[in-house]
Image 1 (tube, rainbow, N blue to C red):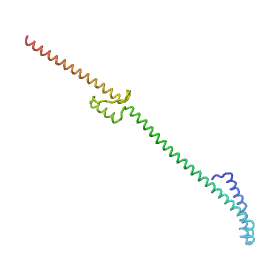
Image 2 (cartoon, rainbow, N blue to C red):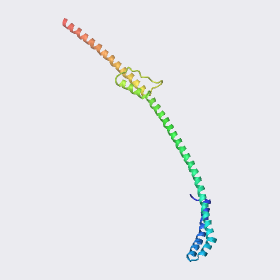
Image 3 (cartoon, one colour):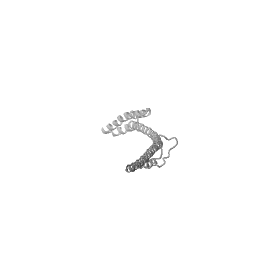
Length: 193
């Protein structure tokens, strides 16, 4: 972990103890290597061992400090994990709710634009396309802009066109019958003459 002020002080204490103990331990080794075992043991017990002990104690203090920091970091990591998990769950739920709301709004918009359920609108359009102008097209009150309203307008317009064509066909048939009768009359008068 990055050292705090306390951590830096403990590291400095370890460095100071090391700087004190290492030369003393080296002197013990040099004295022993020179064949002065008794003097090396005496120096070890009087100076080097206590200095090494202080060095080890400084290291132990730093280990306790690090363990305490580890525990605090672990607790913080657990809290962060719980917070992140909660935020993910909440954001997931919010996303689902927004998706459902958008789905409802879009569906209502489509049904409103159609003026009926899509299946019903398709069936009525097929009936009109097949020439069945007698089917009833139900409209919602005040509906003048939906596809169903436009389909009803088209059905009414086609019905008027078909009615006009029938009336014109009847007029043509009547006129043809009158012309035929007139031709018959003309023919019979011509024979008489």
